[in-house]
Length: 96
Image (cartoon, rainbow, N blue to C red; front, top):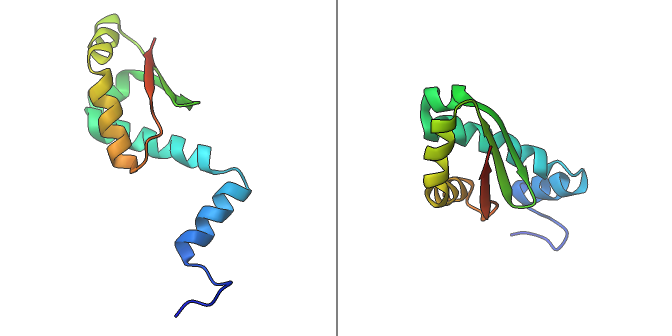
């Protein structure tokens, strides 16, 4: 049985992430890992930069055809990454 001032390890870690403002960096690392797993080695290699900022995932890629392909898949990418993260972090994607 939990006492009033006790918390689970998960809750304690979440509080530390918030207190030290580490959550954004952790989310960034998780998104890069999901991106590599989800998109495969070729697209991961062609991706120069991934950055999450205020709900917008900025993706910089090396080729115009890949940029076009990713633009066509925006809603599916958002859905899959948010499902993997188990939170609704990404609302929009910008590819450049």
